[in-house]
Image 1: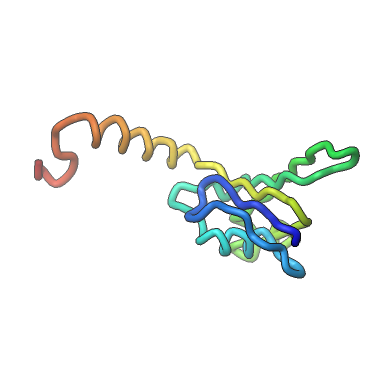
Image 2: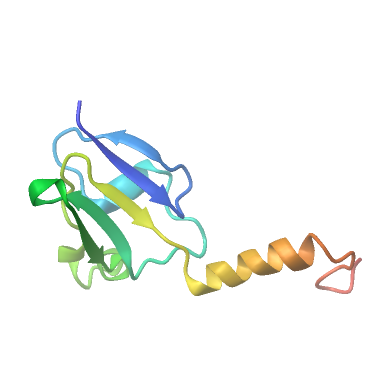
Length: 113
């Protein structure tokens, strides 16, 4: 069986069977969708190229999701890796959560400790 791999800032990263044709958006859906703060403007597809060397394709999922440019929702090939990174705001949110909310014993927001 041939598979594709979805990793990064998705709900359930993992390996998914490639049954027939599958697009990038379908593979992300199989992985439970995008997490908040996912970098939709630069999703990476890592694919085997000639001589086994990896080829990286950058797609703008925002354009595909809005219907502006459906060519960004490419068909996947066997063993493709779909990688969704965090946006800059996602990194900031993680910083606030890890370093402020969990380490400083004060209430943040609404004046409730």
